[in-house]
Amino acid sequence: MYGWIWRHLPGPVALRVVEALVLVAAVVALLMFVVFPWLEPMLPFNDVSVQ
Amino acid sequence: MSTSDEDPQTTQIPAVGAESPPARTADRPPAPPRPRGGKVRAAVRGFGELLITLGLVLLLFVVYELYVTNWKSGRLQNEASAQLEQEWRDAPQDQRQLHIDPADGQAFARMYIPTFGVDWSFTVQEGVGPEALEIGPGHYKDTAMSGQPGNMGIAGHRVGKGAPFNDLDLLNSCDPVVIETGDSFYVYRVLPMTGEVDGWADGKGARQRCANVAPLQHKQHAYDETFGRRIVLPSRGDAVSPVPYKARNPLPKASQASLLTLTTCHPQFSDAERMIIHGVLTNQYKKAQGTGYDDLLAEIGEA
Image (tube, rainbow over all chains, first blue to last red; front, top):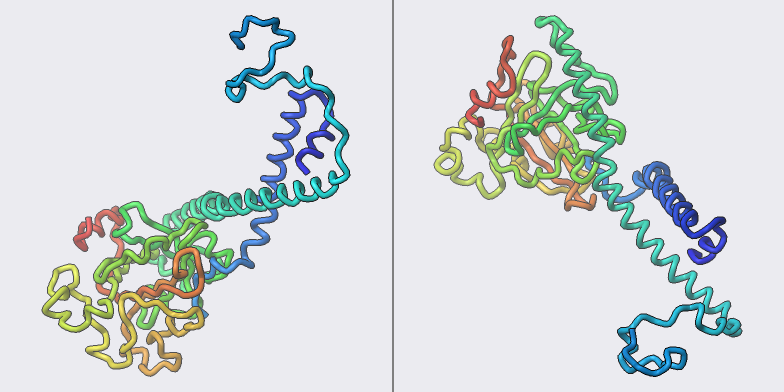
């Protein structure tokens, strides 16, 4: 998977490193700001009230 | 490099080869074509990479829960705090009895727990929905307001989202919890723990800071289950009933004690149970011009 991505990044090695870092940052941002906030209410450790 | 005095072109890697740098790739013959098992190998490698990726995502989620949610909640709390401050400043002194019926998610009071440090302070929002609790502790709707007889219920996060109630388990009997409204400070103190009830008057109850704290069950049998700290199942909604753990209210309003009940998740990092802290109103101070929380702390001997 990672090897495949690396082989398909265009440009010389230095540019590819930059591209890879941008990809990683994009994935982390997607997780932090979209996926986790959506997922969190469904997980069983944040209910603090009695009902 | 190699200290051999043979011709470098024909030098074999010496016995210490494991420590010497490997031969450069360019010197090697081209890699042989992949064997037939290449597909299996790729699948196994792909599976391994997937597992590593999942592990990293899980770690990231922990970082999110413990840190990222705190940043967002911190920002929301600052906004709510500034807004409440503004509201109190703008209202004329005699009209500060506002917020008898605050809107959902609106901050209407401020709470302090001196035991957690002089700077421990959060606004209290109306409601215990996720939006309210992301800002700070939330007040159970339909429970008493500060100072009223009955039971003022407040829920708060213990992990992430500012974690206002992170250290709730460290509260001991007689520790104060202060609620500030537009015109007053209400000082509640944690009730005696289960094991302290017997012999309270001659034991801890004799201390000055426990002056107005006494086991409730000695006066009213209806409070037989109300202690300083309890661990209950999440379904015990009656923990915030006017008389705790009595779903069908046995006492008329006039003979109810003025209680404060804090709830959070328990054990930490789980929500299998709830930790409940019960406190009783011991003092009430009208806010005077130019005095604040610091003066109150000195007044109640917690400075």
